[in-house]
Image (tube, rainbow, N blue to C red; front, side, top):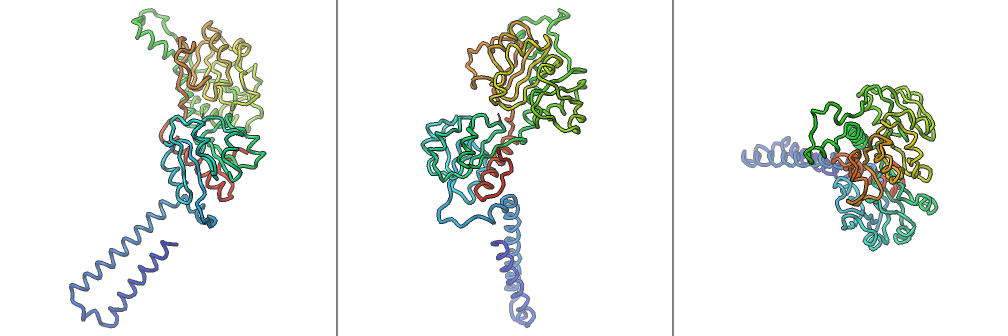
Length: 395
Ligand SMILES: O=CC(=O)O
């Protein structure tokens, strides 16, 4: 609207200049005055059109929400629970809403409880429990919450449904980054990166011993997935470049034939997947059904040469049983980006094992991915507040 007014004004100036010229007054204006007017008009047109271009570029993505904003006497309020939320998301949210930040890093429940009352939306940028207590503290005006995560195991989803509060999350945008982390962990565990480093640190370099630090091959291997959604499929795509033999997967429902064909994948029951896979990758949500399923019994069914990778949630694994399985060489090695608890205490027994590679839950931690996640969360909120379907609803 503003832009078109500017265009309109610019065209009036052009017409006036044209009018002056045609009635012959121009000849009465000195050359200097004419040149100045011409320069002024060109610079006006230039500044109007570049501001139009800038406005178009900046608001391009946002226009769709802004056009249908209801008239508000007071701005609606959005709580962002982490002060370092990427600016691209904050820019989107703060155009038409008041954005309030929590300042604690890491976020703490007491500060969230203190600041959340009266909010209309929340960008939940933490894995702290998002439960009835928080919803009560926010109040009944709350319309929409978006997490900044694919998983929603820390959210009381049933309570959201019961209160008819919109809930968004951020799946898919982290597929690439998390899949890269999975491949990194798989190779590091299979080729004994951590153990190798320990040998150097302790002055135990024994390359002359021919069978020293031998690892597992990916070539011709069978890769088993527990969960076969977007992240798992992105991992499978990458692993196909390592000349694996085939993929087995265990999920509730079968993926399409097309996807099975693409990854040479076959749905099998849990026990078959465990028994036949050289690599087992956990890529499932944490739910009541998946909690602790990787326990002593499961490890007992895996190959002794098998490598376990977990980029999903620590809770899918019984960690005490995993520790025993790794220590007793029931399985060969593990690469974990997630564990229980997080943060893992520095004296946790897992850290004493040479055959486990640990990362501090940073699967999605690249600048671009974190920006994409925050922007998707912001879009969920903007859509929710303006009554449009969210790009990534939980239900
Ligand atoms: O853990 C990260 C996520 O759920 O996106």
